[in-house]
Length: 347
Image (cartoon, rainbow, N blue to C red; front, side, top):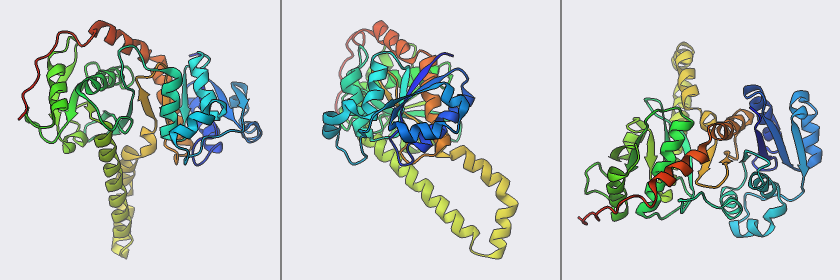
């Protein structure tokens, strides 16, 4: 495979132990990859000492500067160049690493990566995307918080990037795209989302545009790529996570409520484990900062080694699939979104 992945070894709640443990799991899953760890050399080296094969394919770049979870993006930019996160980003910029993974501060990671790497040609704003489980299979959703306000061009860019990701990483030959809206009717929603829909219907690319989708349709698997602004996407994602935790809590209390309930749990444990595996957030760990001129993956800060390994896997799949090259090709073919599309009348 011959890929090198840069790791911010000091980002996240369990750093550096979770990062080293995740790298070991990823090494087993993806033979041939190598790692560059950025952070405090002493604890990282001690941890690598327990993984002989991982140590053989790893290099440590020492720094004592760390971006904390409380640092604002402006503060991170001031001290970031010498931090574990900043040095990992620079490795991607210089071409020494095919991608980077960090479980650190999301705002700082986006700000520093955008400043250092810039965006790909044709992309005005990067977006945060992730893979989510549905009742059918999986879907890609973006943006999840990078852009609170978006115009129609931003939404169209997100749709193209999400479609390329679904093809290259999820292996879908012709993924369907939907714009998250308050209704499915053509005249629903604000002007930006209606104009984006008009552009996607007329765009000169082999895109399968489904139209508008409501929130419940996302989890029903109505489309493969869900596009929205960062404000709406972040609220939708956090709401879904909260509901999942609430139902998990309800189930635990219900099964502990009586002897009969506990017996019912024992009888249904196999089926419940299948459900748990299907919705395990660690399986979907690894949000992509799409649109940057380099592969940057944000791991959940509270994940374990298994989850961090999956985030590394996302970086490997994107690099191996030539994701950014394909996005550039799409936008080269598209030009300035082709012929102008007639404005949609306001309702």
